[in-house]
Amino acid sequence: MGIRICYPYSDFASLVLHLLLRIRSFQDAAIYFSTTIDGSSRFRIIENAKKDGIDLVQFNWTNAAIAEIGRIRQDVMPLPDFSRATKIDIHSHIIPSFYEALVKANLPSNRVPAWNLQDHLAFMSANGIARSVVSISTPGANIFPSGNAAPNSAVARLTNEYMFALAKTYPERFSFVANMPLPYIEESIVEARYAFDKLNTSGIGLLSSHEGQYHGSKAFARFYEYLDTKSTGVFYHPTIPLQEVNGTLVPAYPSYGFVFAPFDFLFDTARNIMNMTAAQTMRENRNLRFGFAHCAGAWASVADRYFGSPVYGPTESWENYAEIFQTRAFYDTAGPMVPHAVQGLFAYEIPKTQLMYGTDFPYSIEIQNLTGALLNALIDDADFFSEDEKKRIFESNAKAFLDI
Image 1 (tube, rainbow, N blue to C red):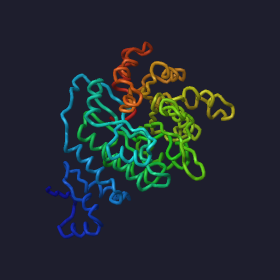
Image 2: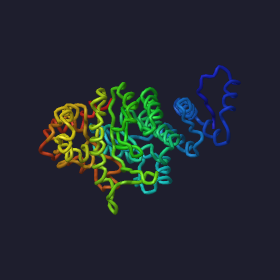
Image 3: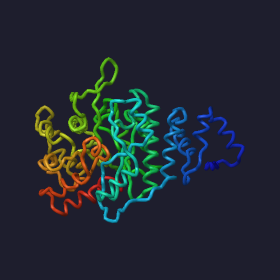
Image 4: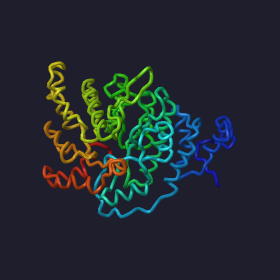
């Protein structure tokens, strides 16, 4: 196999010296030396990460991850028919094989559905989806135990490189929101900067909480200050709530014996939104747009109790927050949340311009046994949407949320 190394060294000797200083084992060599894929080599990924303080070479799963990233560019597959596709799916997920293996090895209780690119493209074509905005679902980058910033940062970087390769190879079909290694603030700022500056991300993808911390946490303030300078969209996906017991984070959900996602995910989304509201995260970061999965979950059911309570004082009245929820917050229909749950938003005069089409592929299809046809029909058959409103939900509202 031929070797192409794309790196700005003035002479061969200096390049060899650099490599000798960096490569510590045969494993390192296997990671460093590989075929260049359309200018995006393994060497580039390793070196860019190193500049950002992420030593990918130390992890025994890096080689498999970067090889899988490379195959996206090498094994470009013929596309199905997209001639009639017009929808934008704001809420879909990718599950690379290396990521699936890491989750199953470290978090065996997490259900991970089967995913591959061919099936994703076929699902899009069959359901009229022209573009999927992909993200990493729970557990996001938080695969390793609390306090492990280094491997979780590596997971964030490699999943972002994977999504970047996907969007670059199929630019008309995929966009992505970047995975973050919160609650590690410096690492997350570095990763966000890299995703914007080098990977052309359309926005930022976060979980409802990270290692038990919600987004009203003052510890997250500097991270949000940085995001605010980018005037971007931030997409929040629910995750399993955690609580600390004897110094260890353990799952805190009560739905034992049931599938977790249809129930507690909705409450964790509401918990995060109210946490952000109480901490004024949305008010203080005026340049951000906030996207909440599953029509903001159970938020519409609990908001009145918060805004209508004298405990929180007049500064927390609905009138002081209405503009934020009605103009800078967006809500996807994945769940499904149509036809009933979505109407809870209308009681707060949330405009239909803030609703976005989402499928939650592949989780909704494999775990909940839903079909793309059903998800489409629930919106198509809703008599409280005009034809123009349906078209905007399917095709254009997402463009006001993310840079796509």
